[in-house]
Amino acid sequence: MDAPFIITLDGPAGVGKSTLAKRLADRFEIAYLDTGAMFRGTAWKLGENSWDWKADRIAQALKGLEFTLSGSGSGSCLSLNGVPLTDEIRTETVGMWASNVAKIPAVREYQKIAQRLIGETTSLIAEGRDMGTVIFPQAPCKFFLDADLEERARRRFLQLQEMSKPADMNELIEQIRARDDQDRNRKVAPLRPAEDSIIIDTSNLDIDGVFDRLVFETEKKFN
Image (tube, rainbow, N blue to C red):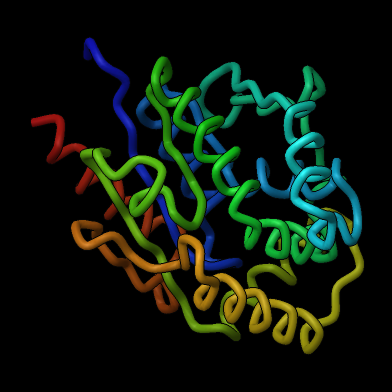
């Protein structure tokens, strides 16, 4: 392909986007862009309560941030100011920080510009919450994944266990519920499917079943 080929994968927290996006990136040998990690990295770098800063302080801080993406497939590496982002941004606390800073228009505008710059030169799987509606509305393949709240909490619980991080199921349910409320009801770029996206409810599907559907729909675009 002469121009970069972009696949968008949107959905709420705990729906399996990261795992599936990495597998898709491996399958099609293109880069994996974790935009949630970009928001988490931004929130982690700015710090707690940064969402309460005055506009000029936020703007100045954002000028000091630069994201880069290298590699392909599950080996894709997202870096902030030249330093690869690691599991320290994957806590539920940083996730809530990210949801808070995501409500700030200046932060969303910064992220939009940074993500589009990467997409201008790189074929990729873009995973996030507004990839198909705001960032890459021209993408030929758009997916929106969803699942029941309790199922998403269960998956997140298992993920944290694999990372040897403490987790409480009831606390996770409430955290994800709060995250959903913020993401779906914010005034700027609320979480919702693009009009031309393919919506897949993953509640009763295993990861292989969802992956096969994603591959089938994507390959139709190539043919």
